Length: 184
Image 1 (cartoon, rainbow, N blue to C red):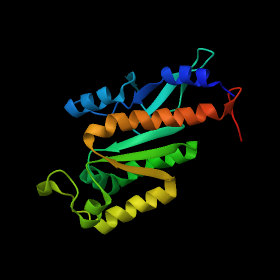
Image 2: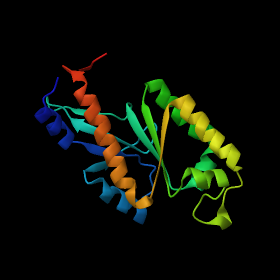
Image 3: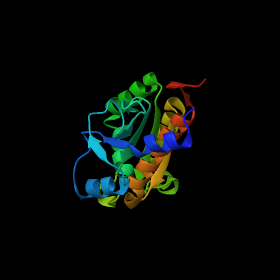
Image 4: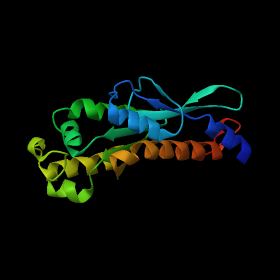
């Protein structure tokens, strides 16, 4: 078991991995500033965000195949993923499940009430034509099928939320490791 001091040392070395497909823009800059920790762009096989840290032996350890966060800017983007882009989208979840990875999905600016009512998306003129029943059914199916942890948040909270999720996932992993191996 690691001591609390050793765990804090490794936690302090955490860097967030940002998938290269995340488009740099003003919101991207605000999100990465919200991390409060260093970050680096890197191609990820699934998800938009993960993390890595430096072990006590000085080795860089990536959690990109252990935990990932998928971010959607609103319900319209999510509807697109469950509609026209479903095959590509689901392949990411299949890859994650094959790795035994834990997945989170953050949806900005939405809540269940808006999704069930079909009132999702930033601009009603461009709202998806996907029926609310189909969208919510797809979400629930993915939660069951891929052990998906779904969270709603405001765009201004996303960066901090990403960093907090990854930090606590890393902390839990370190607290339950012994001699570099996960306890059963």
